[in-house]
Length: 234
Image (cartoon, rainbow, N blue to C red; front, side):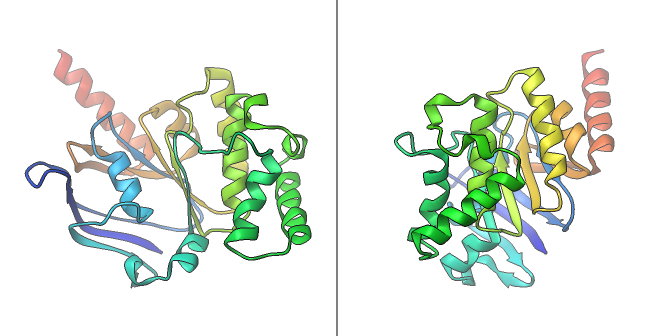
C-alpha cells in the first residue's frame, strides 16, 4: 500500500505548497486527488513520483520509504502520465511503448514488440500501433500514454489531469475505458474535473491551499464542496 504521512513541501521556503498532508491509497480502486488550480495537486503528484524531493513527512510503499527503493524497482511499482503526455513525436505508438522495455528493462527487441503489442490488444487500441502521435486524437493519445505506462505493469498509475484536452464526448468514452482497466492497476487521478472524478473514482481527497479540506468517498467530497460553494455564494 502507498501511504502519505504529514507531507509538507515549499518552493520558496516561506509558503507551503503542501502542508501536513496525510492519507493512504488502497488497492483495487481508482483514487481521485481533487482541487482547484494552485491547490497543491500537481506538487503532490510530483512528490509521489519522486520528481521532487520532499522536505518533511513521509511517503511509503508497503512500509518502505520510497526514497530507499532503487530507481528501476520503483518505476516498476509506480507509473506516471503527465498532462503533456510526453509521447515522442518521431516514434510510433508501438515504438514509444517499447523504448522503456528495451532501454530500461533490457528486453530484446522482438520480446519488447510482442509485449507492447499484447498490451495494446488487451486495451483494444492495437489499431494505434503504427500511428505517430501527431496522427491521432487527444483521446487516443491519452490511451497510448497510459498503455506505455501499463506495459511495465506498475502497481500504481498516476494520471495528471487526464481529461484536460478532451471534449465532453471523448471524456465520457475515456471514463468508461478507464473503469474497465481497474483490474490492470490502481489508478491515482489528479483532476479538477469533478464530473469525471464522480464517474470513475470511488475514494479521494480534496486539496485546498495545500491542505486536505475533505476526504472519503468521491460523492461525499463533491457534495460537501458543492454545498460549501453554494453557501458561500449566498
